[in-house]
Amino acid sequence: MKRRSELINSRLQNKLDRIRAGQYSATDFIIADAKDGDVALGISAPGPVRDAGPAQQAGREFETRERYLANMTAMAESGLIDILLMSASCGETLKAESLFERTDVTPAIRFNDTTDIWSARGSSYREHPSQPFATVDLETASSLCPFGLYSITFSNDVDADLKTLQAYRDFRLAARKHGVRHFLEVFNPAFDIGLKGADIGDYVNDMILKALTGVVSADAPLFLKMQFNGHKATADLAGYDPQNLVVGVLGGSAGTTRDTFELASQAEAAGARVALFGRKINLSESPVKLVGLMRQVIEKSLTTEQAVNAFHEHLQEQGIEPQRPLADDLKITDPVLMT
Image 1: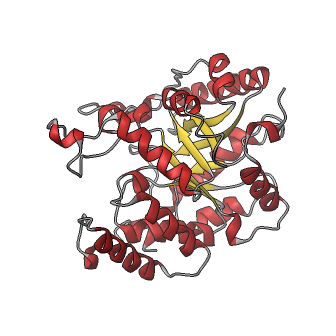
Image 2: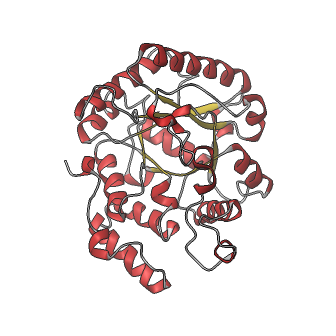
């Protein structure tokens, strides 16, 4: 089996080592650009056309895969992120272009695509309990990128959750065989499972431990990617076993720019040490600038309000039309960030 140091870049490994050793400082906070949306969203994944480029000239509503890949390359080359998460096909393309040889970004690919992330336009898959599925062939993928994401969702349904846990066990056995390491994404269920408010956070936390307490360190995820269910739920999990369980938060919907900075700031204050944002980065008017300001917020050199103002100043300087007026972009709109 490959050693962990051969799977991920030293920049990321050093941060994880300091976090696990209790030596974390804000500069160790890990940021991943989650550009694996094409696995779930299809054609709309690259985001809407915003400028007078080839896509607009062709009358397209959404950008092309070529632009999606260009945005990944720009973010990796910015030096601001630690991980670039991609579909296997995008990872193959960017590896062939030597992107990860000329940057210190760790590549990661999505290893599975359960039914609850199937978000084709007009579909209703997310209204049903998650069913295990993986497009990726792990044997082939391991030679392309031996590090990536495995995703699960618990539905408070014994049959569905048993299938989910069995599939995860099977994945871990195959990952060990092929020298693959992973981080674990755990979604909140997208439909009503009979739990509300803080109870959802407690349920998800307990089910994460249900999934992991029987797993030895050689097979365990390097960190988690999960929904921010408020300060208490995040702090409860992050403080439970900080040497072995590194908590990361996913971005969810795009929201306002203030929402993005607040999520990173509040999650870090609660003990999260990783932010893995997809739409919050990809749908921003200026993704690289956004991530740069995220780092300043995490490192406490800017407040979230100051960061929003700085972002709009940048848009004005660059002649970029903002998606919303500054006053609206300064608002917190995600209810979990208001508590």
